[in-house]
Image (cartoon, rainbow, N blue to C red; front, side, top):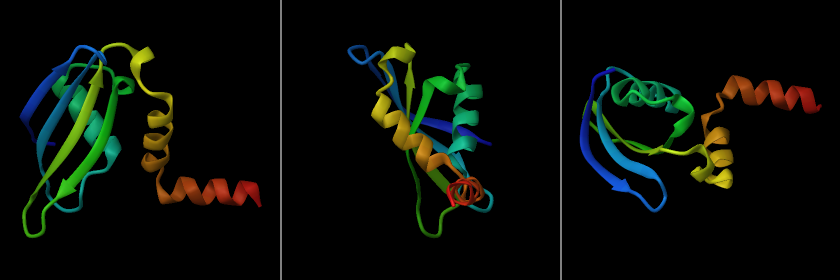
Length: 103
C-alpha cells in the first residue's frame, strides 16, 4: 500500500498524533485493517495504538484519504470510541457468525 502523509499534528494533551494520509487505491476502498497495517508499518508503531476515524474516497479518483489517530499511551484511547471502531471493523462474515451464534 502506497501512502503519503498529508498532515500530522501533535496533540500532547490527549497523548496522540492526528494524521491525514493519502493512499493510492487500486480497486476497492481499503479496509480499516489494511489502513491500520499500512500506518503501523509507515510510522513504526503497534497496530493496537492506532484508530482510523474515517476513510474517504472521491468519485473518479484512484486515491483515498484516511484520518488516523496514533496514541502514545493505551490508557488515553477512549473506551467508547474503541468499541465503535471495533464494531465498524468487523467484516460481514464475522457479523453473520455472531448472528448465528445468538440464534
